[in-house]
Length: 255
Image 1: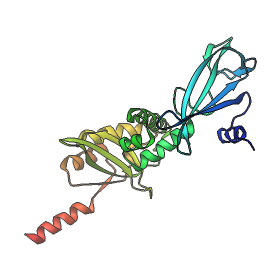
Image 2: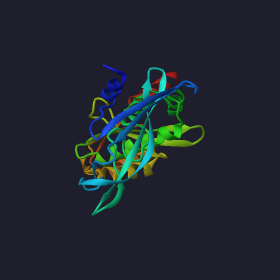
Image 3: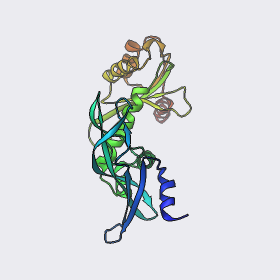
């Protein structure tokens, strides 16, 4: 098996896409490997809107960052056609290795998301060698897509607490699903107090949930949280976070 076959199998290239070359540039730091991909200029391509096979109108050279090849930064470069559809006009086709509008391959974005889950985005950016703003755009895209698909119709028990997002009085209030063993975050919003619970109620009702379905709320002893839970989630029993109960007992023993 030669090098071209290795790259073809690794990228999963299928007709009409084909590998036409690769180039390792050792003059850059880090070294960069560019894999050149092309498509048959006389072929038919699916319209990105309706899927109808259409002839190519023109081609444009585009580049995507891919997973590293050993220690080398790797890029895919391709001449990407625009189809000329009778119904939808001239549209750029979608390539199989990247989502529309992204300058990263799907596999590279997957690696970014896995790293961003384990370390700060700034550290992730330094490790990968890209600007942190580009990583944030990837995170926002996939989080936004996940939110659109979120179904909270079975949500019945929540835990909530505020945390400082940075120095000073900057807070984020986080809501989690207490009935899930992995305790996933279902909602987060800037600020703290009663308004955050109102926003949470609005959010779950936009995602097939109902405030009346919430039967348990776990929170601290904040009067604002307690009052908001009673007003916005009328069927919920409130359980005080054990940390704050222990804190009360400890102070009482000290006194």
